[in-house]
Length: 159
Image (tube, rainbow, N blue to C red; front, side):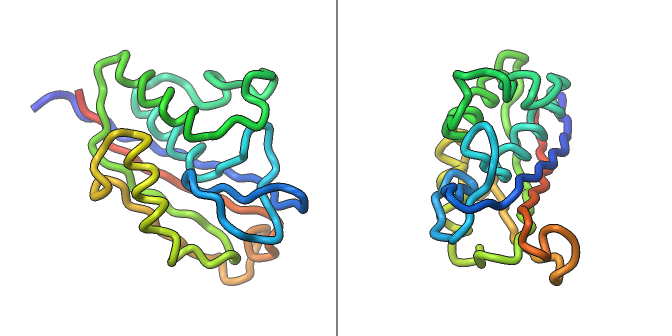
């Protein structure tokens, strides 16, 4: 067996009016969107951080800084594809991903199959290797007050 490593990622973005809501590469209909330099796809950002961490390659802000104009409003699927290329440059490929999105609204359950399919396509892996779950914080904290959305991701990579 080759070398295996695990990584963990976490991200948060504020919900605001006048922005589209992108989660896991899919645009969702919602009255609010996530604020950020890119499209603010909190799920993809957590996955990127987990992948980069597993490969000991720092974090998403190091590789795609929010000071870079080339990343303003960029589709986070592009960042994810580039992250997969970065870890591949060290000889790693993705084993599997397990991610959780924390949001009160919109309800994510009906969108999870499409999110899994989209993420799997972007990363060129089997959809069965991408687990996406959704939860709420039972109206507690900033996510409970619908001020923002957070996401957590754990990944396994192998060489």
